[in-house]
Amino acid sequence: MSFQASFSQILKEKMNDGASTQANFSSENHSEPANLAYLMGQMGRFEFQKPRGQYAAPKVRPQRKPHSFSSSQRQSFEFLKTWIHDLSEGYNESELKKAFRQAAMILHPDQGGNTQQFMELKGHFEVLKTVLAPR
Image (cartoon, rainbow, N blue to C red; front, side, top):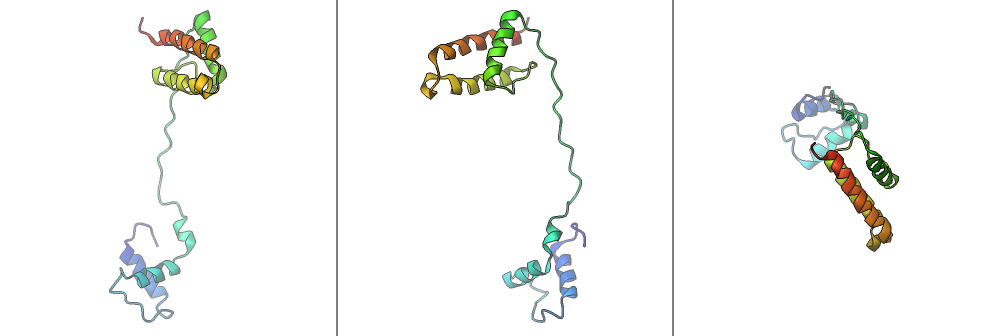
């Protein structure tokens, strides 16, 4: 039985296989709940667990070339990297903003952080934004 077959074809195949076990099953009316329940009972649970086709390979994001940092930019990057570990050296603007927001949630004084570290974070964020600025 293929998965490309229509529901009616599957129902007829199952009915032909189990015609002796269920004599009062009406093959004309496929949408009655009793008929559908019978059909689902006749289908093995492993029929639903088979792979149904070819799936596309997941897209792999190409790695970006790392930025060339000055010493102050490298220091700012390392500070941000201590709080947000998944920031790569080839970050773009949206990744930088996301990392800043995550670090701000950790370091903000209202969230239990330190005011001095939060102010430091803001300064480092401004320095790292200059890496992305057009030259």
